[in-house]
Image 1 (cartoon, rainbow, N blue to C red):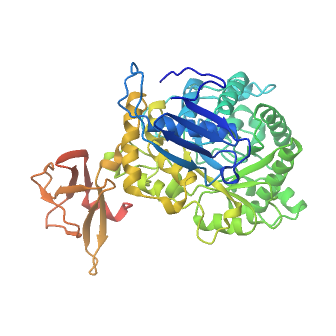
Image 2 (image 1 turned 180 degrees about the horizontal axis):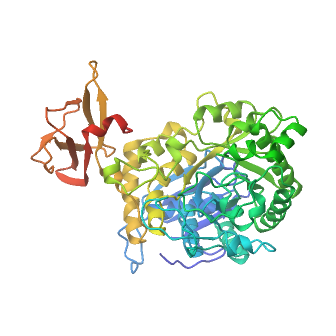
Image 3 (image 1 turned 135 degrees about the vertical axis):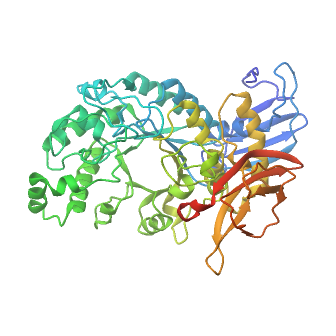
Length: 553
């Protein structure tokens, strides 16, 4: 980085002046700033420290990438700007259960979030595949729950074998947690912990087998062989609530944020429906079905968290539809559709918009043949993230807190791959969360992304270049025959293609914009993008017989 001397109340000539407003500017709020850059200096002013911090980040992004660290002066453009966020909740979620990532990497991830004005770090600390937080008095959670068998390659490829040692994983000590939380706070980032219950709880159950309906002993999962494994806590077992009370008590102490995320999605009701104690509880409480039993469970979690001075956050699921279940402080993450977020906001519930088709960063970034192996057969491109409309049609913006990108890590085994899946799509989400929708300009954003890539290279941060690859889509004509449509996210490109299995270059046929008739005997299509006469990105190939089962986005 660039080091500069700091003075308090020094001369402003030729200086970068940071100033807190004596009289607060209403439109700026806590995170907005004014920046004036003139020939004799720079002035950044704000109502509060977060605003100054974000003003500095914007200024640093304006410094040319080619600056040599030995230079005494840095050229920057002269202009003035007033900038403030549209939404207060600008989040990223990192799943550290499926694969464990080091404390040092989490700190690095927070650094990049801060530089790009993302201010909520949602930390998915528990799931079937690993328990990642030390809880005093429950050493089993980290002695057993933090470790699973090691596998290389495709997720869920081979279940744990009898007697196989569990050596893969790790966890964060409470001292690690405190350090990370403080590090985030210093960068104006909130940290929201998630303990996912009652489903997604195999690591907890492997540690404490009596918490499931079966009471059987299981291994921490690696995603395989889950068909008959009880990964759901027993809603009729008082010990479950005693253990969770201890866990949430310590989490409430470790994390100063007002919210604790309790998960709540994808609960397999098979176990409850087959368990005598759960059926008796449903009868006693006059609960119509297992979904209502989850509502009972959630109410107890909501009350428990509230008793510790916190509020609950959760993933949207059908059980939440029970009248009166949600209190007005609970934050619901709308992830399955825009419509659910719109409806919840109209009903006066606080909503974080995180629909999977625009914000799930574990989805592939382009045609599958050109992307790393992914367990989810779905695509979220850079432009999908950029086009994300945070306030859904029919939603009440007053109850839309903001949005969040989510990186589930079944197919993300390394820290470098976390970066690849996050950047540059998180840049697009950050812009969607910060800037007014009316100011969106894809061509200008793409230019700035390319400029930021130079920074990523210099900082040795991995990132995807998938937006340079052509988009191949199959569409059916009026007679039901498949045709091939080609496109590109990159402005100003020409696309060349072949159907005969040969590699593509600029001597191949140029795509002119109309859907292509598939020649008789063709089994595949290949395509490459060119810009200004130079090839960019990878050659992308699709097998034509796979069109029936492919997603085209």
